Length: 600
Ligand code: VG1
Ligand code: CO
Image 1 (cartoon, rainbow, N blue to C red):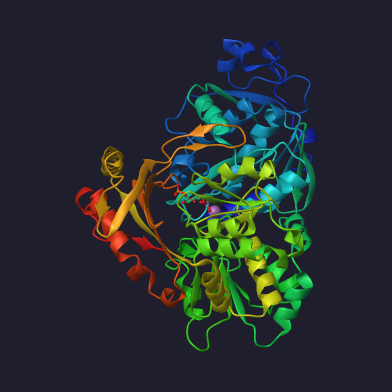
Image 2: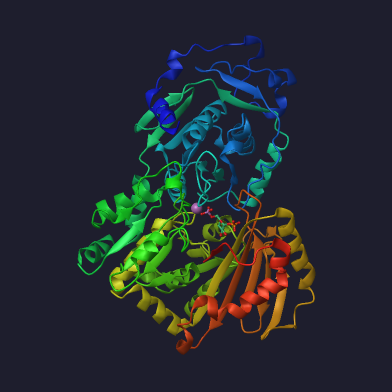
């Protein structure tokens, strides 16, 4: 079925469709693109096959009804593929974007996805709606492929009015798995809450969408075609992004590193979107040996795996770094290319440490040699970066989970680097987290220092102290039980400060509320956090990206200044705090789970 669909797409290029098509014109109900929604007559809204007069291809008004639950979560709207395949489901959401984002009319939109099942169909639907809604031009990645950071890069480079990314990121793909859509604004970043709220609000009252009756466009051939009045430019998925990377990092030094026989690396693209990017940049441009990139062909079901670069789902490359013969460096990225996992020989770099290390050594990369303005991390991310910021005398910000909260700080020039514990690291070069960027930064660092990953991190700990850190995920738990657990925790908060839990005295306990330092917008209920007097923390929140039941995330952190104690097993070092978290939240009693599903 998948192959058939692909063939059909490729067989039906219709670059000059507009000229071949004879429009069905209903003169009596002709309306013009650009009329405000309110001025469309009831009759014309409800009638199908109404026409926009004066355009080469007819635009159709289709009546529809709202679907419940089209509220974007931490990163866009994510649902099962089957949900997205329902007639009008995607159309409603996309129309809600056009109805609320006025600059797209007459503007340019970037569209692409991570290649998962339903990507191509969804792009064709979006193109038709875009044309019918008066978008002047769409830039679409070849084969429908664009990574999340590439979309951000292209929006910025071509100064477009926004972009749409089709991805459910690290969630599995396939007919019975997940699909997703997110809208990025003109800065290149994920839509801020004000925008996602407006889109959601519109989905609750939507009663019509505009589309064109048109065949599928050829997405595989680079070049321009017309869809009604709209120009569709199929662009190279990699070129703009690769150019940006070359402007930031010392490619000559990395080339030298690859030439040295003693350096061996592997990049696992997990059959997701970064394959073409990693091959072009690492192997073709930087001269890494062929085969450095594994699982490099994007597949609609990611080869049946979770494209989630962590110790559990990317265990294949973890094994390749182990033992005396282990690789010097290995990395992986996720479905849409915005996450990264960094490994050295027998060594896993915690994402929170990775952010701290890059901040402490940013000047090795030409793009950051002038220094960094500040750093930001999401609240559950360890405080390792804070220590670097303090030493450097630069700003340090703590934001809620989700990349959209970094946007204002980046736009205002308050920060240069930012990151999340969830394998997300990035900088002001785009407005998304960026998996390959982080890998290249590490390669640049290794090329400049010529030390092993383990030595670099251990020396960092020696200088700044070590923030032992882990995250425990309890996946697909009963939603009501999860809500009950969070409610229970909130009730406890007021009484916790001053209390002794095991050996740890509670310094503060709250439900994190964030006031954006740039626009003063407030985001409440961003996670329960319990801070102890020695700087240790327990944070708990529910995931905003899952699609079945609820996922409870428990984040645990403890600071250890003594270098003599930097080599403990992480889970053992954190055991007392792990038990405190489990007891406090009554995890077993409320969810029936004794152990987490994923530990990172
Ligand atoms: C998770 C991560 C969060 C990240 C988000 C999107 O969200 O915890 O840090 O920003 O995924 O990443 P949640 O709400 O499930 O904890 V991605 O690579 O899925 O765009
Ligand atoms: Co992602």
